[in-house]
Image 1 (cartoon, rainbow, N blue to C red):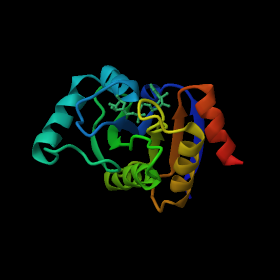
Image 2: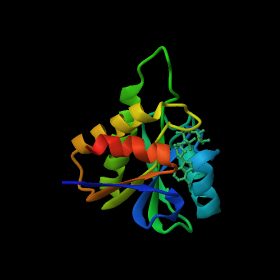
Image 3: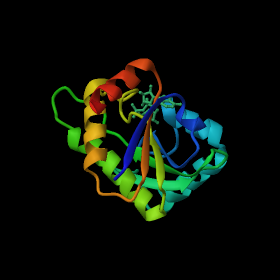
Image 4: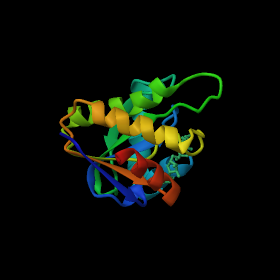
Length: 169
Ligand code: AR6
């Protein structure tokens, strides 16, 4: 069984085996949680992202997939970078969002990570409605078969925290 914990806060401050980054397919950084992770983690993470891009993801990391780098100066062993879908009013991309959580946990298992922190993937720049994103995140993590012992959702503000908390009951 995986324990699910919710906290309101900054994911770059978490002490866990792996921190998940809501990246974009370029793997070259951006704003939001991605910017915060690279800022606090230092240039080592970006250097590794560049190498992975050159060796495996010349066209970018596809949406819904996940890859790992070391975590630089963060208090974690790894950063797992996943690419969430941009929300669409006309197309159901829920499977891609669920895939971010599933694939991140699969990578975590490969690494041997036991504690993993997730942000609310796609709910910022990518505009996914928070309540729906919370439902998909929780359902997917609950249904996952993984050796990860604790998943912590690190929600940046109260609205996000409340949306995830509503899914617990
Ligand atoms: N800790 C935890 N959550 C955070 C933090 C933080 N330090 N900072 C922001 N959030 P976003 P996306 C929340 O935009 O929607 C980037 O430019 C934020 O409030 O970071 O998947 C990438 O490079 C929101 O709820 O990611 C991509 O281009 C959630 O994290 C694009 O944004 C996700 O917001 C990805 O967009």
